[in-house]
Image 1 (cartoon, rainbow, N blue to C red):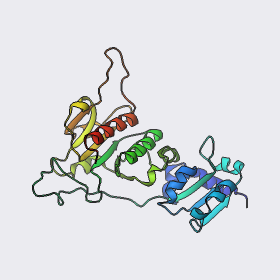
Image 2 (cartoon, helix red, strand yellow):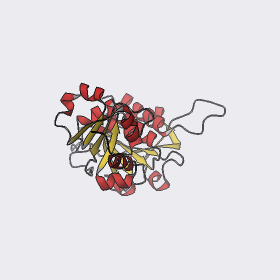
Image 3 (tube, one colour):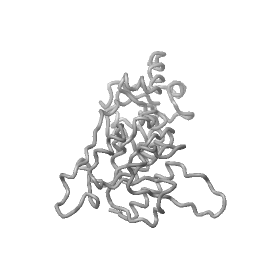
Image 4 (cartoon, rainbow, N blue to C red):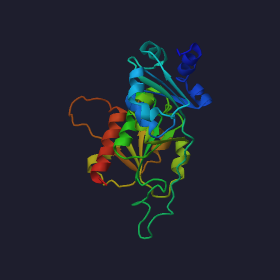
Length: 273
């Protein structure tokens, strides 16, 4: 059965956030991304070439209400990629998540400023994004969080939608393993227990390599052009700087995804377990 014009229109509309929300679906493409998502979500539908279907019979068996074979030309018509990769699948948007941090589980002999663990996670670091706009940056940051074992990313409401096809593709499957929460970031931070470590990368911060970091806390990364917003900046209690090692003219700043990787790597170097 050939793919229909209505199917093409439906899939292409999912590039827009309002249609993703209305239909409750997002698009994933490629063997790696779709394969990782299939281990966590039951797809709504799969559109794939005969070659892909032949190699994934077990994972596709009863996994989706609709599994449709398409030609390479048909795949190009529905794909958001310049070079389509054998398979495109529609998955249901994850249900809204929430994350509550409290001091109820703290040992009696340890203060909140030195130890605080999200009750819903065994991991100790949280990542927060303040107004990230570029889909590629967000996708890369999600991948970085996955690599460094950070389970939760708390995003401001003006951060680009994580289920944008470009973001999903840039995660290379990591979006299946990281919990992404959109919320009012100021209100979220204000609910944190007193003394909770809140880290921010700022140009007037202290050299990250000379700081005493904690194994637990919230790492905030700011907008590509403006950095962390003033309202959020005022709530940062550990100001960090990734120093430049040039003594003459240098780049104005680092790409936010690169800065995220460096920051997470330094925390994991100090506290590898």
